[in-house]
Length: 432
Image (tube, rainbow, N blue to C red):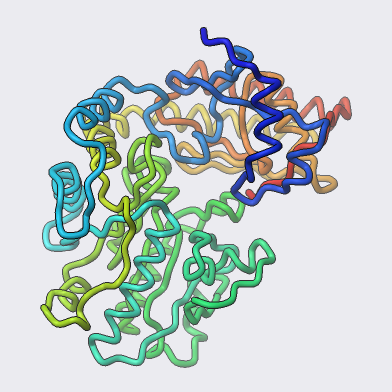
């Protein structure tokens, strides 16, 4: 095992690093706060600089799919490193990006999606989607400019994507580049939109809203949205940044209702949680408007690391794991174990509500604000890392025994806070 100077690392972190996302740096840098310095991982477990191991209960902010240090993804990245680490997507292309685009498109029905636009992360993937839609309607000579998003939605924190929901969610004021947005509470409110002919697209996190506290949509929501968009002539954008790649029990959340949007955005689990990479998947109908040679048909948006070979190689390896290890097929007993365990958790003191969707579980705590952070601290003392909202979203590779361990740690932590009143030190405030 490596010898880490944890004291020096923590001191330098507090002195030099500005943490995100959405971290109160006053709390982070407080003398009593002891940051966890993660240095290693294997499967569903991470290890810190003092040698302690914890179950990665939030899959490293919902990114890790197949576990840490998966040999197939490690090998794919090493093999690509031996060729070239990075090449520009401006004026050139590379085999991993080409192969990944083809494989993603072929995961969907023929003639539905045709092209992939690469970017860096979920926020930029959504930003690309919004710009594509805005320019699509302009190229068609339409006045459609307004996007519809849902209250409590989170679609990223770049300026345009944040205008869909993050700005209001976190009390931030966004100035500059924004998109006109109309927010609704649910699909039933779409019928109250006075001018549907102005709607460019409806944007939704399918099946479950993540940052809203794992809010599960009523069955049939996607179908209603698809029908409304078809009737109104607008586009449907599915933000599958969190829900994609097995999180909900299907490869993609939209598969639960057999609904095909016009644009899908993928990130987080795309590379198995290894490297930053996002893609915006475009229908043939939308892409057709950009197929001309004139300057107006050029999308003026892009990033230096878009389509980077290392990220695409990792994503290709991740897709191969889904196929060869039959990842989705193996989830049924794990999902049932999580569901049953949370049902038992619901009987504990201090619990308002529990819910699960595939490999995602969430617990709402009663009582005063901030107790969730104390439960998370107590869980850490029992070998479980989770976030300030008590959400369980482990890597899909997690074993049944580890699920049981995770649920036991959560139950004991809830009891320690609500029965014994052991709140411990304050935890830095972060969103979600």
